[in-house]
Amino acid sequence: MERGVSLPSYETLGRLADKLAIPIKDLTEAMEGDGPADQERIELEARLTDIARSLDTPKLRIALEQIAVLAKNGQN
Image (cartoon, rainbow, N blue to C red; front, side, top):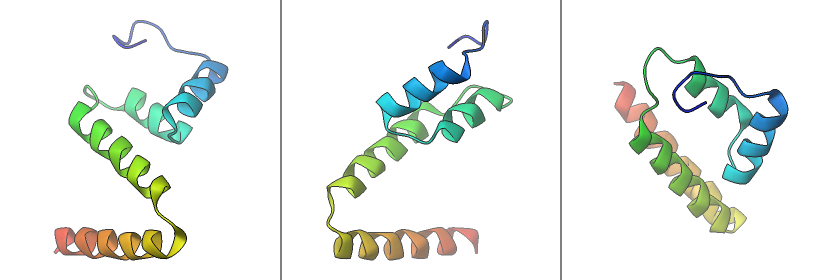
């Protein structure tokens, strides 16, 4: 699967997504890409998810607003 030799079943993808605590679409997008998945980006997004899950709701709201500002500034 990692080398693109075989494709996993949806059941396997679902279990992988659950264990990695990521949306299943992230796995399918990585498999559909033209090149290899950006490992650093995958690791950063996983860390971001871990941090977000550790925050209470008010702090999560603040973090989301800060990330939205960074994303908006990156598009300009």
